[in-house]
Length: 69
Image (tube, rainbow, N blue to C red; front, side, top):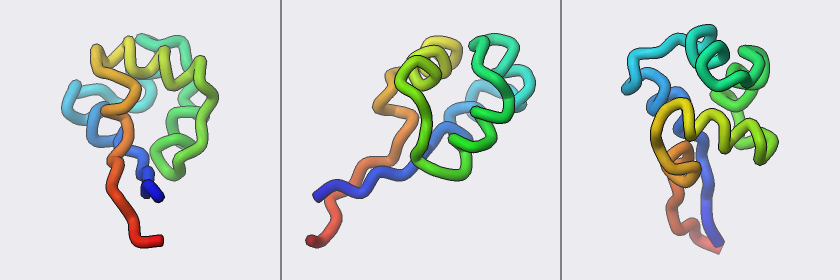
């Protein structure tokens, strides 16, 4: 089983962007970015748009670890 934790906040800060700036750059509403920063929920289209705006892979928006069953 995998444990998946959002890492969007780290990627966003590494890019030097606020949530509002990332929203403008990606076309994803700031509220959706805020929700994603707090949980692993997000639509595929928004995840792809965010990854493209940050010039990273979608997978890099998560911390993926093997978890004990």
